[in-house]
Length: 439
Image (tube, rainbow, N blue to C red; front, side, top):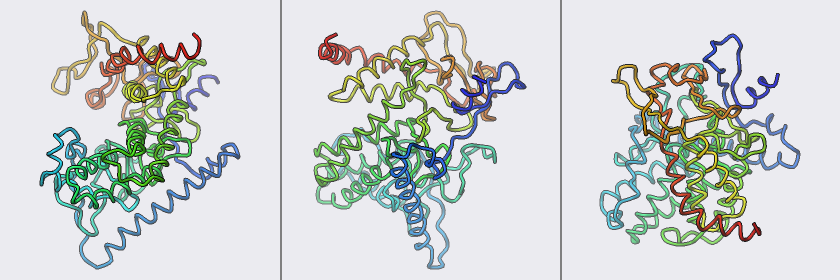
């Protein structure tokens, strides 16, 4: 009975009929609904009902705007070209480049694809052609492994990821427009108008508890969850913090909007602290996504179980370490996360190979290798777990299908960057916090 309770709470189902190497099967994340909101404490319900109604109203407005463009009887334009959108909007070029004709073209395309809500879809090639009247705001974005049982199958195949923080969407567009506006003041008005609309989008999309969904207006299922994947929450919070400072390239933002941005950024930190997973009263790290209403870890795609996620957690620790004046609560969260990573470091193992390697990607013994960490860890045992496209959860990466074993980074040394950053950060902040607390 105890195992059944944990399995239900963590988004997967245990089964004694499954082979020994299979720990269970993931169940889909739950959407935000009025019925679920009704189960919240009475004091919390009104804010969530307003949020849900705001999302529904904006969803209808977005669809109506596109429909209005298609009433002329002209053929519907083809879908936009799908590409790696973030790469088409570089944020690391010399300042002068953002005044170039190339950057101006990209900025114009960005503005053309902004949704009525103020966000952007993902995987848009911003170096290509500007959006034309009646064209979708989003490229295909459909799952390349379609299945009626796939968690990533959209409820509406014609309306998918229309406004998202996934794959660095929306936040990258806002930052790029800011750089171009600063480099070309005489043409800044159109870009600044788009930035303001994007900032208001982030404010509207933020949950009452301070998190952000992957897609807004809400699309349902795991897209409704608090999303740490692709740094969705931390990047949204960081932009709003920059906006609130009132400095270039956001000095034009009205005072009221700057104040709202500051409040939203602080609420995001509260959400991050509240969702840090506790096991037997001890803080650990975070999941890839958390249920927006219960804050519990939840599933994402079929092969992404409700589990402790090392990549997202390392990024969250880096974000918290970049806060200029961390509270004692933030310091404690960082300390706990770093301690967890140190305790789970794997040495003497190497994750290598690929599709062309006999046997594919695999874990093998290698003297002196490491540290590495598994992609995800069980919340009950804190040991590595691995999800497959058929929703099964395994305790051995070798048991995965070749497609998923080769198609996902199940082990990585990436979290080490957070441990490296902690060395310098702790010299200032841990000692200061201990002194203020009289330790």
